[in-house]
Image (cartoon, rainbow, N blue to C red; front, side, top):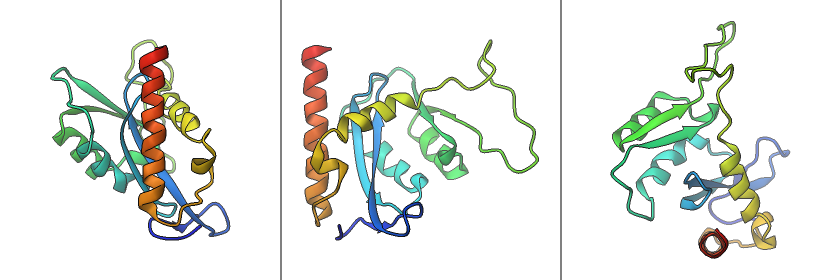
Length: 159
């Protein structure tokens, strides 16, 4: 694997790797995609994902749910500027007491990340996406977009 949009993976003995960043709706339908090197932090792809949503956004309020990796001031700023209501889990510092959950009746934040994880699992069912064989990042992005189109087609047909 090589080419552009690859970077040394910090968890895999510094082998070159890539990441798929994806923004989905509440059903798991892909709305925006971005690929980057494995060594790039997730917070740098938020602006790209939020600005490049493919479909027209409805006028009703929309929520942006993310995990602790996105708990930064600049991410909140981008998300608020685009009109989303952010739900980003707080990244606790050392010796900081756990904050109470703002959702009434819940002891912890409700899990919402599984929707994104399920969509990523649907994507990596395709062999060419599980292991990146393409040297050009544009070719690999085209494969990812084709797989997302297939997912959207399946959702339209089978619900």
